[in-house]
Amino acid sequence: MTITLNGESTTWPGGSVADLVQHVTGQEDSAGVAVALNGQVVPASQWDRAVSDGDSADILLAVQGG
Image (tube, rainbow, N blue to C red; front, side, top):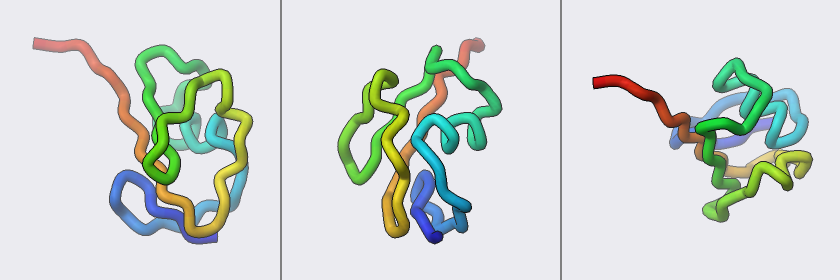
């Protein structure tokens, strides 16, 4: 399927928001991660929600540094 991920069209084999977060960030927990799907924030408690063909996902990862 094709989704828009952080503004870029990409091929995604399918899965949940949690699967997509793990793919992008390499982490399984929600610490420091914010997700919007089709313009709506998805709380970590709802990351079991499926990502569908044509969806637009934005994933932001908070990082520390100076």
